[in-house]
Image (cartoon, rainbow, N blue to C red; front, side, top):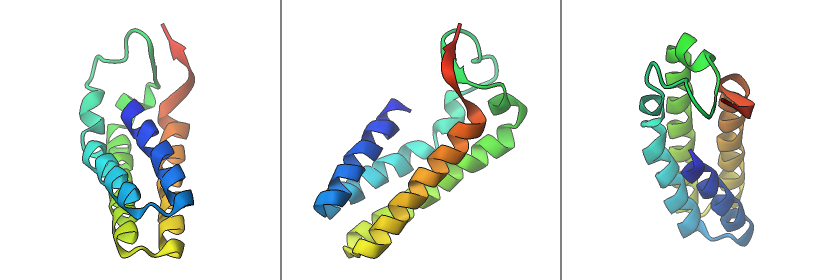
Length: 114
């Protein structure tokens, strides 16, 4: 998850500098990890230091859907970057951020539990 955060930060800088190759690469990196997100939270992994909320396991189908939404949004961002379309890149980057925020709002706590 920290890797996705670093990728989003890199994309933000790349969007501002119009470095489309970096946007495309980092968006593909996010897309590649998005499909793995549900497997990072198997049943019983809610113990210890985590920001994961119980909703991940209570609404596992919705959580998996959010991961698929991230994969789709990241793929669309990569495609926009490949086409070097400023408007599309900006819109698709915003969409990735919205997907992240939506998932974090429901499935991530503000503070670590212990």
